[in-house]
Each structure stands twice: as C-alpha cells, then as structure tokens.
Image (cartoon, rainbow, N blue to C red):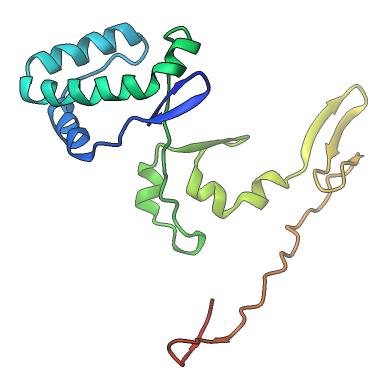
Length: 180
C-alpha cells in the first residue's frame, strides 16, 4: 500500500514490525470502507486502546509526513491510497477444483462469473467464441478472429501458439546441462 500525494508514491508499509503490530491489533476490527472518515475514526479508537502501538505509529507517521511535506503542500494536503494485490494463480494444468469453488477473484463471462484461474486456463475458448448478433433480418455471428459478420456460425478453433524451444545450455559454473 502506498500514499499518493502530488503524484508521488510513498510506501505505507515500510516499517514491518509496526505493520505487523497494527495488523494483529486491528485483525478483529471492522472498518467501514464505504465511509473513509468512519474508517479513520475506528482506526484512531483502536490506537487509543493500544498506546504502545500508538506511540510507535505516531513517530513513524510524523517522519512520513516530514518526508512528504513538499508534496503535501503542493497537493493542498490531499492524500490518496494505492493498494496492490498479488494473486497466486494456479497453473492451467494443475487446477484444484476445491480452490476454484472457493475463489472470489472472478472474471465476468457471458456464462456468468468464473474463477480467474479457470478463466485464464481456458481463456481462448472464452474470448474467441463467436458473438451472436440479432439484426432485423435474423441472427448473425461476429467472428472475433477475422472481425467478419456472417449468417452461419463460424467454427473457431484456438490458434496454435508457437511455443519457444527450450534451449539446452551448459552451465558455466556447475558443469551440468540446465533448461532455462
């Protein structure tokens, strides 16, 4: 997570011990993400109930504000948050049905929401399907590969993907063949 002020990003998680302490003390607290002021008030109440963490957080926050001072002035005190999420996608050849059923990271398809791992594994089959169009003179089909519209549904197969050849290289420091 970063703070953004005047177009510049500042790491908000640069103090790992403080981050871990805050995470453990706020683990059971519900933050209203729809109303930022309520979320901030809830966080400040939590800090008030944890003075040891509050003291460490205050020093960290003051140092962060000092580093951000020029950008805070230029942005008239306006700060936004930018978060990054890393998702551990499953390999297409090793999809776990239990994980797919439990997944909340979905892709919107014409058949409804689908687990992103499942979607990625069968992406071509989904995005290359002909699109049915209803016109005044009946049904037509749009071919996503050619861009053509035709009366008959085209048979589309996923294009063969040229896979790079795995080169065998002699390891200069170990002496054995390795595959990059």
